[in-house]
Amino acid sequence: MFFAYGLSLPLRGLYVFQPSAVILSDVVFLLLLWSWVGLRRWETSPTPFRLPECAFLSLSVWPLLAPVFCSASFSINSVARDIYLLAIFLFFRFASIDVNEKNAFIHGFLAGSVLTSLAGIFGVLLLSTLNINNPWAYALADYPYFDGFARAVGLSLGPNMLANYLAIALLLTTTKNHHVNFSRRETFLIRSVLLIGCIATLSRSLFALLAAVAIPTIMFKRPKEQRPYFFLISVLTAVIAVYVSANLVLKTNNLSQLEQIVPSNAQPLASFTIWTNLNLEVFTTVYYQLKKTAVAIFLNNFICGIGSGDFLTYLTINSISLNYPENFNFYNPHSTISGLLAERGIVGFAFCLVFVISLVRQANSSGKTTSELTFLWSVFIFLLLESINTDQLHFRHYFVFLAIYFQFQNYNTVKIAIDKITEKKSKIQQ
Image (cartoon, rainbow, N blue to C red; front, top):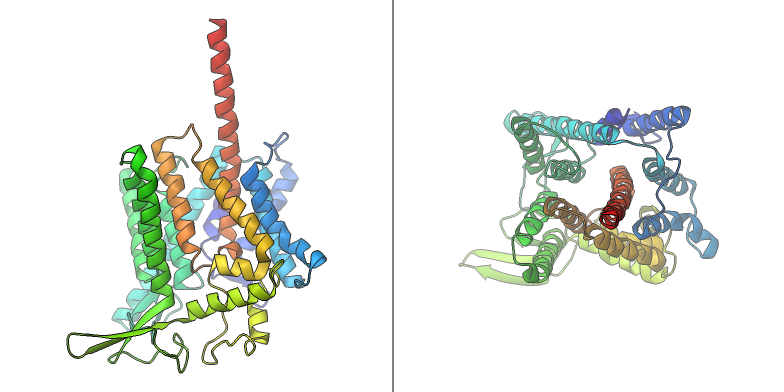
């Protein structure tokens, strides 16, 4: 069942009941939960919650309590979604999962990622070479840099979501900490399929992945006193690059009109000429406008926000008062940071900040090898860069991986402490 659930997670586009947006992984999770209740395999003496878990639980529970304290909305759909995501986290945190079952889940996730990557690659080949429309890829109609190119969708909902799943799968193949035991040939084939699929999405997640792998790898090869400076400079550069690439766009006199990307009647932030006949203008994009709108919503709902998952509804109703461009479609925030501020207010943002800081401190604690530290910092940098343009708090797989991480992180912490006590006792006896 763990393999089946891991397999179904990347297949985000496979709906079971379309009107209610129930996907395949939801059904598999309910079957997994039902079988676990029948087996009654729960931790008899679970390790206590540490600070990162307390902060994350507070962040997850806060949207359910916010309407009690202030004017945040309380829609049935939002509450049901938040309770469901919280149930996923609590299940994987408290279920008595051994290493084999954890490995089965990760192997299933890798298998599902490879499957949806192959579907995306096949879709791009069909659309690019034979001009055959298919559900596994779509053509970029008016994006300035890749006009007419095909982007892989696979069995997911879109190129960016597919790239996110494939990037996480690639990260899982870079560490021995998760016991992903494959031969060199198998590892090479898996990584190749995942990487080609990620490239075929033409998503910024690929850059986030490369930066997340390269920065810690280079950092831990440098002298210890140089590591903080290298980390800060490298991460800041990557953050600026990701932000600029999504929120600013270059428009030339030779490119197609950008009605769905640049606000109508917008004035360029800057314009300049290269050589003699190439005029470039810099405009803000819809991603920038969404962040700007989210901040405006946050300032009007400072304490509690407007309610988890209600950004799209709020924007649709209040688009005129928020000065949202008429030529833009309505989207979700496309940013964990600004979306968190708008939907959960300063209280939710404070919980998130405590969670991130405590998670970094825990990941950097003693008792870890260089390869484990490299992997943990790679995951942290990837999540940080993805948070700029992705609504991570609404993705199911993040809740699963965080729960598994916390369970085994706490287990390893307790094990290290017990080993130290045992070592001291043996020395005293000697």
